Length: 153
Image 1 (tube, rainbow, N blue to C red):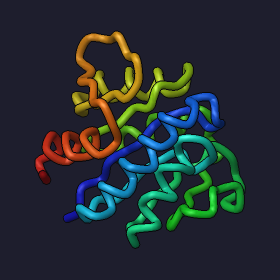
Image 2 (image 1 turned 135 degrees about the vertical axis):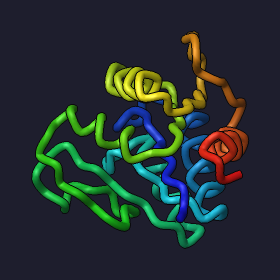
Image 3 (image 1 turned 180 degrees about the vertical axis):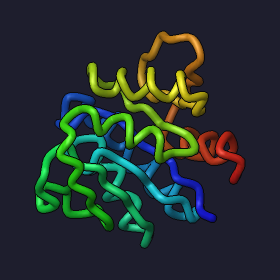
């Protein structure tokens, strides 16, 4: 069975070009390895990760906060409209074997906290300063480490 790797990050361009490029590279690397890329399905880092995976023919799962599947970014393969708002962050993390966290805001931090509580490996990209989070310098190495920690690399 393919590993499910979540890529979490801001839903807008607040992360900046370098971190959005890292999300894109992580999505591409995961898709090449046959992983399912799980995101919150919206814009920003989530869209960058989905676009990267789609460019490699990969499968992306978008767990949306609202009730309309059409809100998903154009690179989501399977859109699930949860209607749960931010509570869908728990579904994103529970669905994943490992989590890649792109520097973000409170939503990303909530996903990191949930992943840590559940014992899911977390690889951070950006200036994270939290115990239990491995840091990776770029998307490719974050994806490779996530696959390794998920037992698939």
